[in-house]
Image (tube, rainbow, N blue to C red):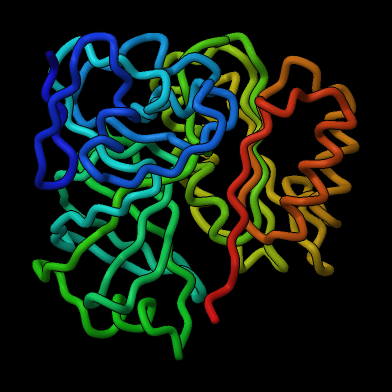
Length: 319
């Protein structure tokens, strides 16, 4: 018999019984529908616990990497600690560094025990009620979480981070979420990363993580803004391209600009779709403005990319 910890309770799961059935028997409500591993309604996450292989059948490699599993297919073979897949946990964090990257973007770094993958997102909480989500630009190997914050004069969280919170101050971060991260495997696959504005943050993390994992396929990163002065991390990305032959950095601007052979001028969707007409066996990462993400997601599929290889993170402006 295995003992499964859920919240503050310990539930006995007899051999041959599913975790879903045991939780229901303990009057713990878990969303479910088909009970056959097809609908994924009962998805949960394990915390530093072994997961039976059958419980992850049918899940994406991204979900498996984040320790998700299906409760209706889980026959625990040893003790586990679990929570609902959409449950939010908050971690203590300390701001260790901040600096403006340009007139519109602030870089902030936090030290925390929270686990994450480069390219996921977290919410920064000012208090119990006020929080805002930002994508993570750093790798776990960096030892800190780095966020690129759009500087908004009236932003509840962005203004607080820029003008009130100081290095050494504490706050809370919510559990890292999202599937837009680099997962090792298919190292020869070409990666196409396209983002607008601070959509560069997760892509910067994904690109660095891929290179750190010795990804051998070409990596094309497109960073788009309205004008050249709105681009950021230019020097860092130019340096990265200089150190890795398979990494290619493309700057895209919407509005008229001085003649610069290093700039692509026009619409990001048009530029990417024209330069990459055959996306079979490619992995695509799209982050930023929802309109761009939706259009390029559709075009990428029509140009041959498998749906499972198109990873997206659309940024919605705060109300």
